[in-house]
Image 1: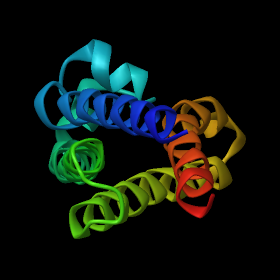
Image 2: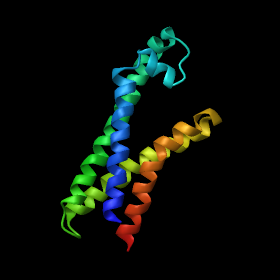
Image 3: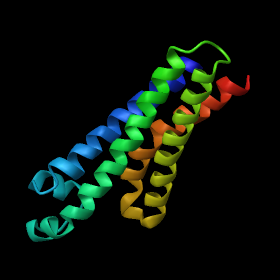
Length: 134
């Protein structure tokens, strides 16, 4: 279960790096802002600072999940490194999942995006908890 949890954490992190790239690097490209439901180029320009900031939140969560996964993968059982790794995995992936839950409750039109954003980190947390508690 540890390997599966870490795999889902890494996949969730990779997805959040992709989201970072869209929000912080390519936000004003029509293909990107249309994907996020922005109505026009002018609206994309207006919301650019907010998207830029939001993208970095996603990047920082990804860095936490990547780092935590690496720490757990190369730690001895019961070591402080393993504890630090799981703490990062649970914190980062838990935050990813909770952000997806908030998105889901924002409106029906966001359910698909919330499911995409939240499924991988949820699996990472559930399988990680099962591994740690067994």
